[in-house]
Image: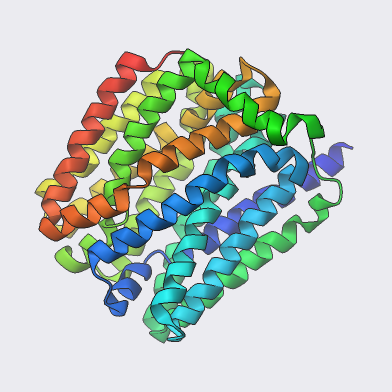
Length: 394
């Protein structure tokens, strides 16, 4: 039995690694592909917003159905969506209805993130006690982040040696398909809850979750934070490519720095927060690093300083991602352990709702002035840091 669990854990972590690798291979070339398509930033932002609206209403139903679909089957579904998105990117790069297939690719790529993260976090939380949850979530995040630090170098190398977007997208598709195939042995005896724990009962649990003050207040704060980052994240790489003159290799290095710091920091910050039995202070520290990050975007024009910004982003991820998830699952567990997938789905829905206008708002601000965009993000992250101190309760 123990050997079987070890094999299952190995397959799970390998799949997570490959999904992150597949997702980030295209990262350093995507800004140039978007520029090559000639998409106006307001249109690009509109695509992001429209995509967010559609995906938004898939998240809670998906989270309530995880016990019926199966935990690993749900993760495999997310990987399949990632694969489909890459196929559409390939079609777009070949000039086959380029704009429309790009929109489809962007839609599926956006959808897979929430599906994968909800399923992945649900799997870890299902098998991890609270005393080790921060470290466990940090550990699996570190594995994914190691892959995220490698992926951009693969993508930039392929593009700079082939000058082909199609090759990069095809490699990403192959990696995502392999990630799904690796999960197949786990689907035969998948983890499933009782049917009565899912579906409509899961939807009824939403009201119970939102009435719980600690969860309600934290979700408000997390929504402000999500909007703060959403107005800028679509445009950072484009800004570096257009305004700072960054090359694909520069973007890969920047991604590598933040990912490497995150890979080490996820598990370390999770471990320390477990030991101190507190999450709030680490969420606040994350926002402080975010303030430094956006300050560099506001005031710097030197590419070297953006490497420091990447370092700050690594700390932002380390002190936020798995710790915020641990905090949410722990508060949900105060209601019932069985509602954890629904809690994660509610969080994903609310954060998605907060991010929905971010793309179009960011695009409008960027077209007015890139500096104005990052000034606005800086102000909002500062507000978010204050709200953490005022509203988040352990």
